[in-house]
Length: 222
Image (cartoon, rainbow, N blue to C red; front, side):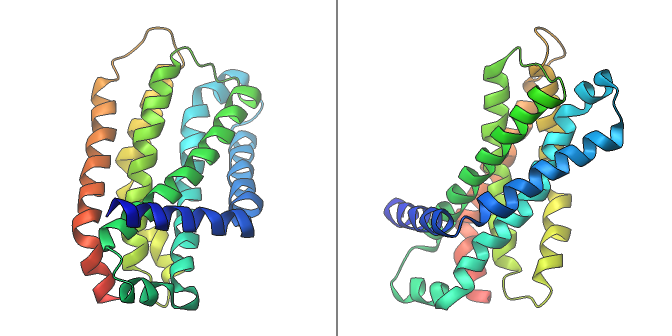
């Protein structure tokens, strides 16, 4: 399973490195979304700083839909999914590989948006370890959910609109917990954050486990 996961992971990232869809389309979209939110709030520095965490995570959530759509589009091109079945690749390995590739792309987006929040919105990082821990757990959760629902909607005619309708409501706990952790990371000492990290960790574990167990059945339905 792990060998298959690595092969799928490397394949997806190689394709993205060649096509540069993430670099030229998804990443600019995330940056534009962040700037648009900033303009909507107005020039007040205190308001921008207070809302920086929320704006970043909303941008990540919307970008995740685009990244997942692209990830599943790779499977539909040139009969890749059929070829994987004929080659006997473990569906759990496919899920883990695709989730990992999506997570790497989301991590890049989060890094860029985080830098934009610091440079443009006045967001301050006092507890970097907390910000990184929350980001890692939230990224895994978003990638796992997106990969599962991306596979479920892969054969639907209206998959471009159906995917965000399914994914965005599901990831609301991730957005809330991610924002709370980033807000806690922006102050030297503040409200408790352990429960929010637990939410992110539980969400990631549940959906990764669900994907490993159910991804093969989802592919058979498609």
